[in-house]
Amino acid sequence: MTPAKKSGPPPGGRKRTPAATGRSSGGGKAQRSGSGTTRPSQPTTPPQWPDRPTVDVHDPDGVRLQKLLAAAGVGSRRVCEDLISQGRVDVDGQVVTEQGVRIRPTQTVHVDGVRIQLDESRVYLAFNKPLGVVTSMSDELGRVDIGDFVANRKERLFHVGRLDADTEGLLLLTNDGELAHRLQHPRYGVLKTYLAQIPGPVPRDLGRRLREGVQLDDGPVSVDSFKVVDSRPGKALVEVVLHEGRKHIVRRMLAEVGHPVLTLVRTRVGPINLGDTKPGKWRNLTSTEVGALYAAAGL
Image 1: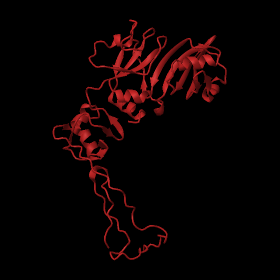
Image 2 (image 1 turned 45 degrees about the horizontal axis):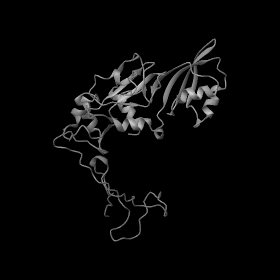
Image 3 (image 1 turned 90 degrees about the horizontal axis):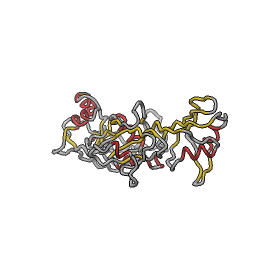
Image 4 (image 1 turned 135 degrees about the vertical axis):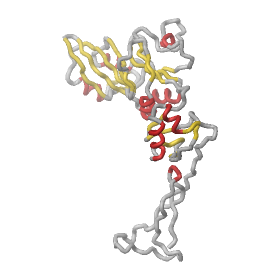
C-alpha cells in the first residue's frame, strides 16, 4: 500500500511517521480494519492539512538563541539549551530544536508559551505615583509630574493608563508602545486593583450592587470583584477590581452608590503588584513579570 503523507511539516520541522490510508494503490475501496472497529461511514484516510510554510528564523549575523535566553534571565546557558532541545522554545511562531540557531533580539520568542523580551533597549518599570503628582511626562502647566521622577533616564517612556492627582499607586512605565497600547485597550480586559477608603458602614448588598452594575452619565459600569478589607467606626477600607479604564471610574462609581472615596490607591495592574515600592520610587520588572504582562495583553 502507498502511505499517504500529511501535507505540511509540523512546527519545528519534525517529520511524522506516515500513516497507512487503508486504500490500495489501484484506487479501490477502503479496506476495513481487521479489528472490526471502523464503521463503513468513518473515513479511513487521515485528513489532508493545507501546506504550512516552514519559516527560516536563523540569522547568520544574529546571536545564539540560548545565549539570548540566558541573558534574559530564563535560566543558565545549559538550561536554555535543554529547553530548546525539548521543543519548548519558538521564534516567530516556529519551534526551534537546533542549538546553532542565531536570531536577532528583536524577533518574537516564547518559552512554554510565555513571551520572552530579548531586546535590551526595552524598559519596563513599576512606579509608585505619589499624591499630588500629575500623570504626564511633561506637564504644560508646570506641575510636578511623573516625568520629573524619571528625568535621568534616556529612554522615551510611556505611562500605561492614568491616575488622577488625588490617587496614588501603581503606574507602569515603558518604551514598548505595542504593549502599552494593548494593556490599556478594553478588548483585553486587563484587571486593575484599587484600595479605597470610604465612609462606613458598608451595607451587605454593596458588593452585589457593584457587580450587577451601576449606571453613570457615560454608561454602565460593573466591578469584577469587591470585598471589605477593614471596617472601623465611620469608615471602611474596600478592595475594588475592575477592567474599566474610564476617567475617575472608581470614584464616580462609589459616589453613585453613596460611598464617596476618601483615599484611593491602585495596588495592581494585571499580574504586576505595587508591593513595597515607596511613593516616588520605581523598580524594573523581572523577565517573568514582563512575560506575564505580554500574556495578559495577548502577545
